[in-house]
Image (cartoon, rainbow over all chains, first blue to last red; front, side, top):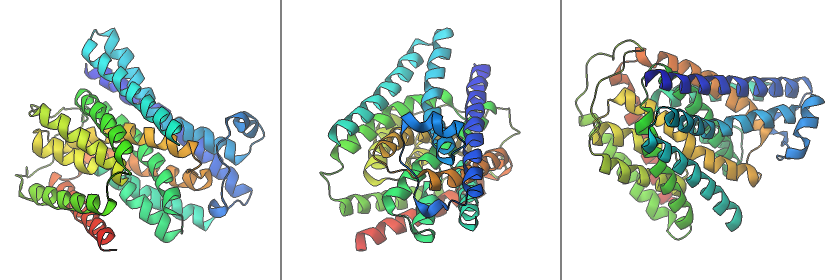
Length: 114
Length: 256
């Protein structure tokens, strides 16, 4: 199972490099455009991310990078669930599914309760 | 330009520190953003949560590759941490914050003293790639402790690593190096759930988070790659120092 752990580790590293690259481009564009980090950035708007990225707006790259960062641990748990299912570790599959379920419940609760 | 570079530098320091100790680095980032850059606490916590996820992901990736982190133990415990965070979030407004801070400070001091008194191996562990051998004990304690860590994390806005590392090391017989690596794996999940909520409510500023998280990415990459060269005694000393500092901050909140 050490190769499985290694695969999960490599997945995490790969995703963080992608996130790091997106954030790096975003910060570089910020500096080029003379935007101060303390000037107050825009809130997340999923409908404008693609347009912002294609028009080289820093906020597009920054939000894409930040979403990738936040999604990384959840991706890791889902990937682990798939890996455990492939090797027949049913108990760990249930653990992984339960983790994702609890996180989803936390988010829904937070949204509903405001 | 200077502000962005300072944020990157601060993030790098937090990333090194957090990845070495399994804390995520939030204890450094929040004071950095509030005291040095004048951000509001809520904004700083939002950025800190994303930074904690970055530290967790980078460090956990390296530690899993080197077989230092215990994936199965981490996932079992993080399920209960997530449940604890859900409970904590639900009761957060029912309890007096000062009482909680006082209790938490007491817990931190107790853990710091326990860690100082624990037996310490004289030399660092073997080279990367050779898993440490140990037997996990007191899984029930682990379940209770992990749930408690989740509750405290949600109630007090602190990284759960400050509870999880001593819990695994002192309570469950996990070597310190494995405990910090496994904690790094776990803190990302707890922080991810909270970070999504902060993003939804506009609590994460991308212009502040961008440079800070890049710094954390660099720092966590460095920290996780040098961790096997750091003497466990140094690691323990640093951890105890962070525990006592956090306890002091908590007590100051109570007094204030």
